[in-house]
Image (cartoon, rainbow, N blue to C red; front, side):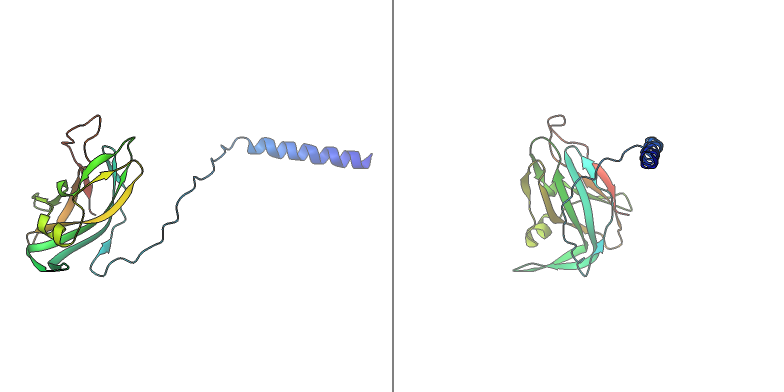
Length: 180
């Protein structure tokens, strides 16, 4: 009899405790993630810790900034800046249901004076960075963008263009991503 009471008491205690916990919402299990190894930031670069931004079906993650570079060295030449080179390390990810034609040369840098600076084509070629490529669904590509700014200018915003989508065939409006 005594064992039956203990069993009944234990069962009631479990039920009471379970009833008390019922008011708290259950958290869904965490989604699995890829473990990407950390990499050192290049010596002339500052790591950026900005939230990703979307333009159309393209996600942009700015991860590095180097400003005030007087020249660039490539495999066959050294190239002097008219003012200063600014390099942005960028990761783009296709988030749409289909691929897009991504154009690295379409990206723009806005300075503290409001000037809009286009990607420097010669610097991009010397540093062997991509021009246009197919960005597929779920595809992630990392590369550098180079801009030649006046010496006193400060880079403030990357105006990012993801590429044409089914709902925006011309992709006329970029997404502004503040660098600070």
